[in-house]
Image (cartoon, rainbow, N blue to C red; front, side, top):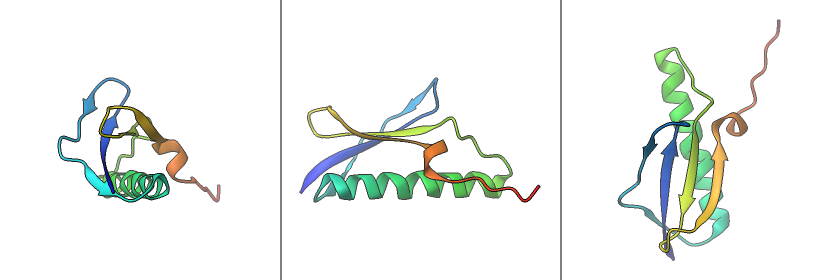
Length: 81
């Protein structure tokens, strides 16, 4: 198990994850990042505005970027219009 830090970026600001979380693999990191991105999008939708310009960058204990997910890639927008 290794500690990974999930940092939220909006193109201008960064919300750093000071605690991190223990995960067993990079596959688990990717799944957790996708889950977190969708959770934030869901909360934003409840407020009536979704910002797909955000992303989550995941760093390992040494500060190396090991995964990144853009919110626009976390969901598929469908319209019946």
